[in-house]
Length: 317
Image (cartoon, rainbow, N blue to C red):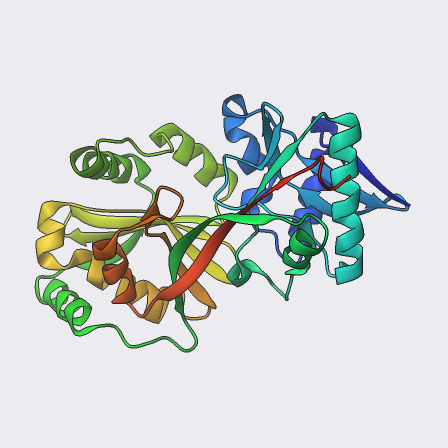
């Protein structure tokens, strides 16, 4: 018998253990990551059980009468283990819809599936269920840029020239623990170009780095002791994700980031499957930052879509 329950703090250990062995979960679904900013969201995550065995998780929050893939995460679809089949996924979404309608007074779902590059093995049973059971509509499609590391496309001539210039000027790439200096550079970049602040505070980044030392790493481009640029990467197993990227004006002139990413792609993370630069779109994918995506594609990256689906619960019951 399939049953659905709300996540509570008492489930943390069970939840985290399931994420660790899932076929499409990353450390971002660990409750120690999800709950660091619990004050910003009303958590409404779900756990799916089959004959008292946990078979799936849905990281989610609630706003009004809408259940959403957790707002603190870039993606957050159904997290499953290797026992999940297509037929069971259909049953799972039927169960979730019934649970939300009958006991939770939810009338709409906004769902962001985990992009396929983050799957350890194929895990798109949820996408079929979205159309077959939920009759979901695609409400947004954003585009990220990922480099296939085992079979990477050659970097562009522009990126190659930048890399070589940085090397001629003595720029060095080093892993660093100085998150505060990097965050200050990042803040200055975002404020001057976009009039916004980083999503994470410096204190939050330091907290997360302490909690996940195997997964969160800062790499910097230096000339002597001078910080020219850097990127904070999230190691998600098969995929390296660049959470933040920043550079000084001098760093831009010297090609510091060109050398940095060339080093990550060809040396530091060459044994991984993908380096995901993240999205280059805004306004739910309706606007493409052509300059930004051109730079990412210059390192051999190509498109991976980040989708959002919506459906009305009452129409499913």
